[in-house]
Length: 153
Length: 153
DNA sequence: TTCGCTTGGTTTCGATATGCAACCAAACGA
DNA sequence: TCGTTTGGTTGCATATCGAAACCAAGCGAA
Image 1 (cartoon, rainbow over the protein chains, first blue to last red):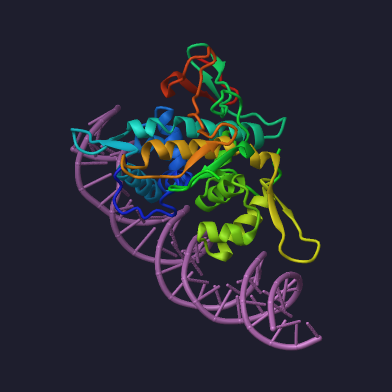
Image 2: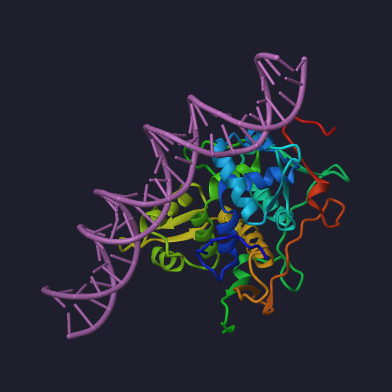
């Protein structure tokens, strides 16, 4: 499990809330997007994001502290690199769902946007779909949160 | 498409960035979580989230403005309700991916958390998986972002 | 019908976070 | 060797957040 120092959870029992506490910030999510895209250096993130250096510095520190990135110091001194941990790479599904929702809902029919390609085939990556336990597609109203210690009615 | 007034996009061509601009905020995401869970009233959100009223008021206004929620005024005066639009319900996959990443990465082995149940079977909702265009599971390093107007190398 | 309570906010104000710009040391590169 | 790039830190003005007070409209019970 992640071992971040001093997070006090907004809603400790809810996995959605714990995730938003850890990575639910615009710059954090975009740093993860770039990391998944292969970027590793401070300057690469800075150029890609256009974020202020102090904010980038802060977010990288938090991401390392939270076990999403590893800082790999350059043996010759400064200029370390930042690499995703397993937990960080596991955010791929989340970033993909951000991307696909945006593609479906945040662009006009005439607006172009970047696309994610499966490099083994050159084809676009297919849509994610939630499935129910029976294997059929799952709608939100067919799912229910069960709190810890609670029995189904 | 969503028609929010006056968003100026952090990175206009990137669907991930557009989505984070629209919903990439902790309280916004938790309001959507609660909406998907059936909550509709100001007081329900307030009680569930423990958020300051002015912030909740602001986020609800933004969500309505951005086409994620519809405000349904109470004909008898105040106390309107907030209902997800189609674009809002389409965030189910995103919230589910937040939940599942949190379940995998943000809890110790001995920590309990709420779980999402498929009500038609009573079983937990299965994990989301990204698939490549060939139908096999897709790893992050097998996917590549292609910017608009760019050809594959 | 009146009176107290609840709801759904808005306002105020101090604390916190953000972002721009300047600065800087180390390393790189010509 | 000397100027440039990198990877930051610091200072400061501004914007955002959040706790608390306030408030008007409904509601509920007497």
